[in-house]
Length: 79
Image 1 (spheres, helix red, strand yellow):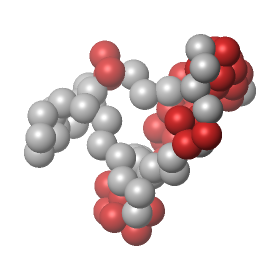
Image 2 (cartoon, rainbow, N blue to C red):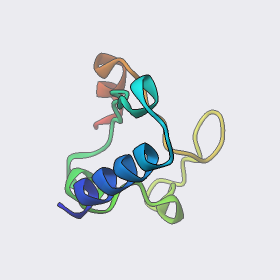
Image 3 (cartoon, rainbow, N blue to C red):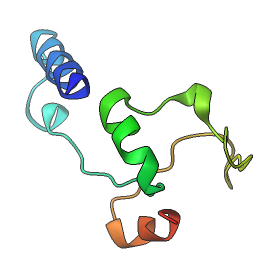
């Protein structure tokens, strides 16, 4: 997918800038969303212009893409 290609290119450019070790190690983070959104996010990433487009929900801390290192926390947002 295009998103994987973008990720690999960014990782390579960071390495070329001299970053190494933990700076190049991806962090795993989970995002809860409705099933119909999964493919769109996987293909194009998070679209900030689409925040709250369907629900009007701007989030507890304001508009943004909320992520967690705990998958079980995000499961509640998949409905």
